[in-house]
Length: 165
Image 1 (tube, helix red, strand yellow):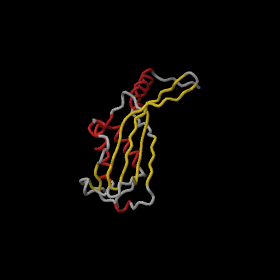
Image 2 (spheres, helix red, strand yellow):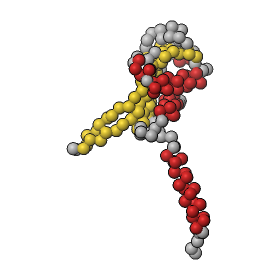
Image 3 (spheres, helix red, strand yellow):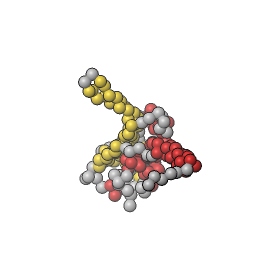
Image 4 (cartoon, one colour):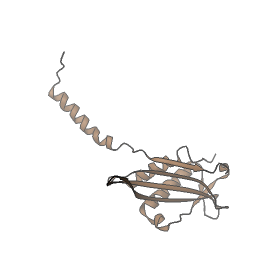
């Protein structure tokens, strides 16, 4: 038995379908992430942090400022207090940027553009790196930096960065 739909029903379905297309494009894109912790370090001893970024041009950039703010919020939400470098238990460093990697396939070269964020945590007293995490994903011209950076920081820390209890 063949079902017949009215023109109004089909038009309504088309309008609903087309209106959902932008939402599909807004779905969060997945990040490649990873982290490594020094398993001998007593993370329970950490109460505070300070930023110590090795590359001033990154810290001064618009994306660097967005990243530092996202990191600050994530660390405070995990129970850590921000202090001066002289008083902090750990120092946080980061880098943000995009890179191009080329893979050769016969005579063709495939270029892939990813946005990458790396975060390092150092014990202030010893200078030893005790934790690092990274995140990357393909970027497009339509990506807005702030939500991408916030999502990347969440992805880096999720289940990887110890919390202050």
